Amino acid sequence: MGGAEGRVRICLALTMAVWVSLGVKVADSAPDPSPDRQSTVVEGIVLNPMGGGIADALVRVERADAGPDDPPVAETRTNRTGDIHIELPPAAPASLRVRILKEGYLPFVAELGLEESDEPPFIDATLQGGSRLIGRAVGRDDRPVVGAEVVCENGGVRQTVRCDEQGGFAFENLYRGPARLTVKAEGYGIIRRAVSIADPEHQIGLTLEPERAVRVALLTNDGEPAPDAVVEVLVEPGMTYVHTRTGPDGTADLHGIPQEARLLMFRLSGSNYVPSDYAERVVALEPEGEGEVAPGPTDIRLRITVAGRVRGRVVDAQGRPVDAVRVAAGGQQRYTMPLAWTDARGNYELTGIRPGLVPIAFQHDDFAVLVREADVDSGRDARLDVRLARGEPLGGVVVDGSGRPVEHAWVMAESWRGFQTLGMRRVTDGQGRFSFPHAPEGEILFSVFRPGFGARAREKLRAGRTDYRIVLEGADRPQAPQRAGNGPGVGGPAPDLAFKTMDGKAHRLCDWRGRFVFIDIWATWCGPCRAELPNVKALQAKLKDRDDFVLLGVSLDRDRGELERVLREEKITWPQVFGPGSGAEEAFEAFSGEGIPYTVLIGPDGRILATELRGPGLVEEVQRLLAAPLSQPAPGPQ
Image 1 (cartoon, one colour):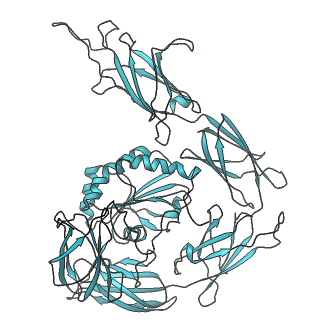
Image 2: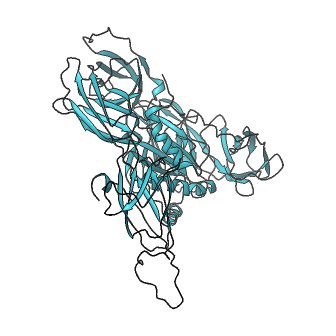
């Protein structure tokens, strides 16, 4: 098969029953058509590339040599979910072809061989769009913008072309419905246009305006230029994303800012600086005169804090190094807080720390949590060596209002001596029990919750007791998990986290800008997580061939061997983030901080489209959301 037909996969199988008389041999190949042959029922589904069913598509089964005017052997239409059910007559020839027609899509034609199989006959057809978008990009002077990059997002598919010498561009095989065009060219502001494809050929003309010149000067907290700082900007309206890096003099020019830009949200970071989030640096732009080009750039001066660093060594009571200790800087739980883990020699290094007297928490399951303060100066290293001690056990049971054990409830330490970065978390077992073998001395404020129950319970517990009884009251309807701390919500920009997958590859979320990213935070010891794996595997199977989709697992396991065993047994092939220093803990703190399984879907513009996606309808819901940004942008700052 060639052309559009060759780009579509079709899986066909046939189970045929033939009544035979006693003593008559059955032929190895399919028998010739005869009145004794039973009719064959063929089933299947017709999909668009997003995996959605196409309703009312005409399905024709015809002879392989049939002409355009010859009648079909059988004919039907798909139902509202795209399903096919068609019965072939008993005298149907063994050599057939299937033709599927639907307005707005290219015809689908493939051979339909009736072969013996243990599986029922099934047609799996994915239709390609049949519309074409052609356009021309020019400047204000009507001259073509040669080489402009034009990106078209339509039906969950992302295509990129360059404008030719006349400024022309074209996109083939588009689907009728909404499309989003993004145009970038040197010296021009980035433009984004919504297009509605309704005809076989749609034409559009785009006029690019000169970019708004914006120059950023970064100064450190000492008033000195801040070189080699990463500057990321979200531009409103439109949530356009641009980024750059400051030079030796601490300045950088922002390119692609549209003339109509009214709000710039800055995220500043770098290996030597304290990172800031978008909400911390917001600059309003004054509107420029209509039809005028600013004679010079808009100068923006921002401050960035030079970070300090804390290094040290963690040992036990006998002076032996302790590996895999979680080291967190700061007194409050924030997804931007610096985190590190000790290595096999017990050494750690925390970077990006805001200067001042900073609490440093050391947490390991085999020891009591320890909090010490470090005096941190900008641009300097502080030294903090600690010795961990064993603690006292703390535990109990979580029950509902009727006294029944509550399984899979989260028990988390919220505060101890004014600090909120303990990292003490447990999930109750089948009997509703939880246990911390090494809790620190003093009163600890715990919160306990589980989706489906009412408000979380908050209890002050002390080490040395293992018979606590915590009651979770029920709710009239299931409650969605509450988002922890200052984590981002739906519609907001996702934090630019760094990851290291188990194959040793390093990634940042911003590297996947322009693609959908689905993050699944889970663990092998989490029963609900394991129950969700079939749904996540179905999502991977459906979308693995899409270039604009990334599936990333984030495992909170501590045992690499156990994780690898489960990955093998479950045949999980998508990348997994695991272990100290991998970014797994940071992702958990940033997006959830409370319970797993937890999923988050991030759009191509870096904004969070949805969280807590799970269940049998996961594939359908993700497919719907992959199409939604084209017509229904996720809510966010305006």
